[in-house]
Length: 269
Image (cartoon, rainbow, N blue to C red; front, side, top):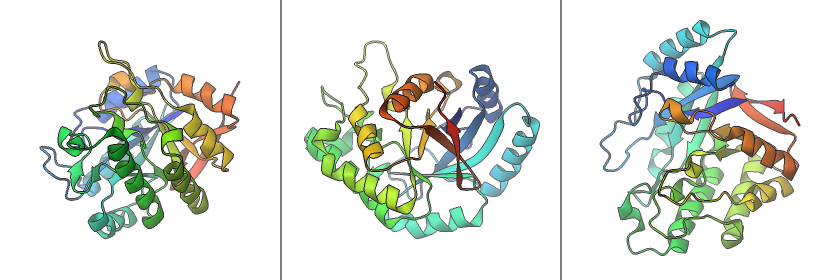
């Protein structure tokens, strides 16, 4: 198993040392880890710097990979935050470096950070979620320089609604559009466990399995697991549970990426 969505201290919103992440990954039984630190060009109103010196990043990660060789596979990735006006500049960064793995993500819709309360002001749950999912559908269709679409459920994390759950049946047309585009382009879909962490005193959203079932029905095959960890606590979070879910649906493999190509691992019984 590989954790394919991890943020080290190279990400503006993380203080986790990459070596600490590697040690924890070994401890919890992972075979590999992909560091996918943030590049979000022109991110609105943030206290964090979501840009990286990738020359420094690659030099560091290559040394780290060599240090853990034989114990843990360390992969170099990027989580690219996509907005319409940053696509070209983001593509230049991705093309200029030898990444193993690229996540395409939506963090900003109509110039607003969907992690902040201001995004939801004046919007019903259906309106807020629809706008976000449509932005993902747009990204998948219009942007090519990514390998998998990241955290479709990012929108639920700070949603102010009593029922934060995101259900396939309520947005089936948009999900189908996303899945058909991903499959046609040979791109993958991420099971991101961050949105479903259990916190004391907070109702945990439920992952709607119908979303994964529909992806499978349409012919989707590429699934990666990501904890979206910014601390060591959640590396590999609930991967065994979701592996069983995938197996029950009919998926035979999970994947990670090396040199921008999917590597498939059979899901064991």
